[in-house]
Length: 73
Image 1 (cartoon, rainbow, N blue to C red):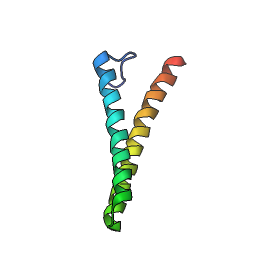
Image 2 (cartoon, one colour):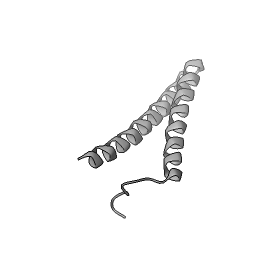
Image 3 (cartoon, rainbow, N blue to C red):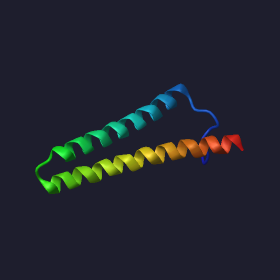
């Protein structure tokens, strides 16, 4: 299947919601723990991990918005 379906199932919707939640929580935890670290190298690694989860969160949102834009047109 090259193109996603026009509608998503309830199960798909719940999984997408979970993916967003997982990435948001991981981003928040990484940010919190980076602020608690005494070791700067570890803090930098946690900051990078948080930024990665933030990018993933934004990418998922962008994909959802692009799909919605295509349906409107």
